[in-house]
Amino acid sequence: MDRLLKKTLLAALITAAVYLAFFLWLDRPVDLWVHRNLAGTWICRAGAVVSTAAAGSYVRLGLALTLILVVVVDPRLKRRWTRNLLFVGLSCAVALVIGEGLKYLLGRQRPVMLFESEQYGLTFFAENGAQHSSPSGHTLRAFSIFTALALLFRRWRYLFIAAAALIGVSRVVVTAHYPGDVIFGAFIGICSALWTYRYFFGKEEPSPQP
Image 1 (tube, helix red, strand yellow):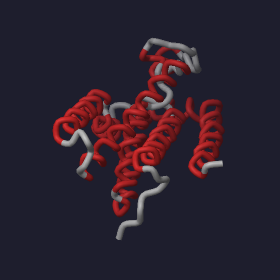
Image 2 (image 1 turned 60 degrees about the horizontal axis):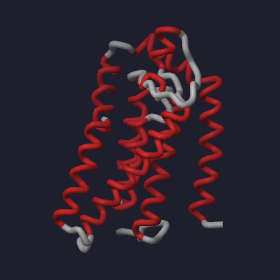
Image 3 (image 1 turned 120 degrees about the vertical axis):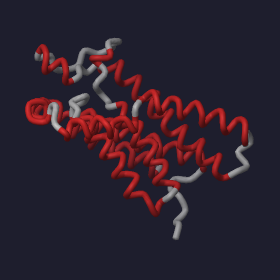
């Protein structure tokens, strides 16, 4: 079996097990604690600022500008920077499509529904945004973009992944998502970037850089 496929399947099994554990035992108490103790504090306000870095409107605008720039400047992708830019954009686009589909399919109720009416769980095939908690959109966008950048610029890979993780944590701090949603989103973002790299550049891993 293909090595990347093996890694992806193993990671999927681990992520599913962790997600289930959080869903059953940890997500609710964690978000209730955050809501009671951090709401209105400077930590919550800082989390809101950090979350803005992966806001859907900004990311979608960035994707549109990326496509326009590549088509206008270098439609045949002869320049390295345009290939890299398109790769980052496609990594995020793939994650977005997968994430939006799963949000609708699972229909997980957001923490606000737990706080206001004690509703918790999956509703499936939900069109209401208040039931689109899982996976975390901000997190999958952040991890797809920053993982793609980490693959291109390996010297800074730890900084990129740390930035994505910080955005993921901020979604729990502002109680927009449960921890399980963030873990799920991170998995989708990372896998989207890895598979896009594989098919975009024709290899599984980037060449070593000094």
